[in-house]
View 1 (cartoon, one colour):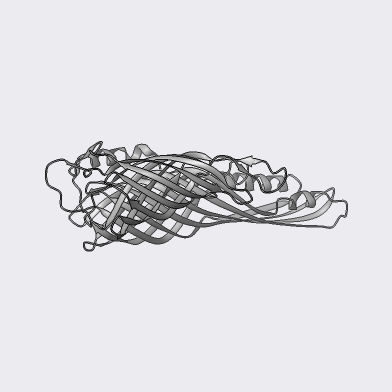
View 2: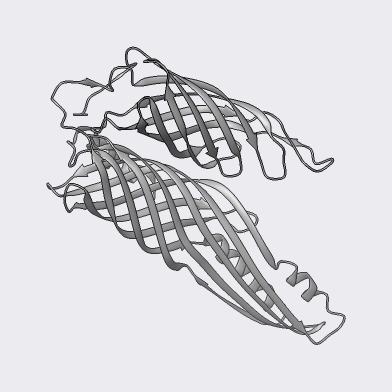
Length: 391
């Protein structure tokens, strides 16, 4: 779906009031997917044409529709805007090709069955345009990290021992995995059942899934019907601009021990900043964080295996829960946009040793990397920016 077609919708959101209060929510949906597969069709057309050029015949079929599902966790501000991390399963694309060929090498039959399975992790900005008191239109714009699994089965039979075409044809059998990034757009409607429950009808679009010279490029469409549950809402806001809260913006830095499968441990570092959101319950906290991290050099465990390293920017929603005075349990979920791009998650504990300083120990898992981090956070005396709930 072209981004231009959503432009009017996004402009309206700047001036529209919020239809519902903000808060942390979990959304689960199920439905079906439809994949647009022009490259796959072109590749199969080429096989059919090759069979026909050898006095044979060929045919193929593609099943582009399959069950799909998604799960999203997000934060909805007390305004149209929000931030959401999601997981989606687009199911399978199945193709079947058969051909019978008669040429100077004799008779030959070819059979190919291919299954392409797609899952994605996404990070998106969300917005809502109220239609009535209980109905709103939802939009998403973001980034998705996809994982594509290709499973190909090829068989070939012939009546001539000198035939070499069969051996060449079956070399494409096997399983392969690919990863990449795609733009993510979404559009849908939400019906508010009560203060904590809502029903959602959503369409999510992912552009450019696949590797051009291997699987070809596909566009994914996921249609789901689901429910969302609001864990808590923001307090009622007054008409005047309010800050994020005194001392709720912070800066942090730390060191880390990082490892990767088949590699040893390496020492790294990270820098980050964040802003705590004004949630209602004082025992819980939610923040938006962004940072940059490097792993240092990781040596391969096997001799002559070389070395590697990873670094890059990341963005996450971070939460904390007060366990005892000054001690918090922490968790985060988000996306990494560096060498190990994909979903980022972590759990840990934090200790407030003063009004301004917090010591935090955390285990972080990326797509491939695992890290144990020790960080120090400094909370500014005054917030660096203000937030107006009426925007």
